[in-house]
Length: 148
Length: 97
Image (cartoon, rainbow over all chains, first blue to last red; front, side, top):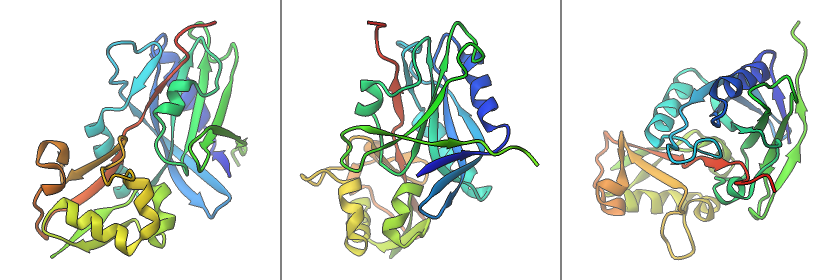
């Protein structure tokens, strides 16, 4: 499957990553499924990083905020098609923690790398989906169609 | 009585693409059991082989996490809704080695 980020979405994720630096940021990818071929993201919803112990290298959603966000998305006619988070000063690829703590296959897991507080230094964003047997993350292509 | 259960996006292929299903039951355990009986492919995504909910699966009765209201024995009425919400967490490698 591929991840289609509508204009502005990637920039919003990168901005969140920069603002949260040196902590990890996290949030929801909202949009719609395009059959079995793509997840289309039209908006993001920032989530608070509820990990207070080591927020530079860990993130946790606040479950109650997640429940509320799920409701809001439903009311707006949007689906939660995936999640994003940042890796401050680390590459945009899944860590062992990401694999251990992953939810179900069928979501996009977008990771952005923020180096020295700036996305511009790398501009790296990669997306993954969890293998059906949960053994590993599989890279998926990101498409960023230009605005009309 | 039938209770409405909201289904997260990646599990909807197993419910005929429905965002919510209804199932009978007097408590959360019965409702979820009836949901997975009606949609058998959901079972492995919600439950471990021993029948416990998977560690990252949270279930809410309205606004309450059922872990604090009696887990599967949490009673339900027709006016309640159940939401299935995954725990989402992760992180970077702990060191740059």
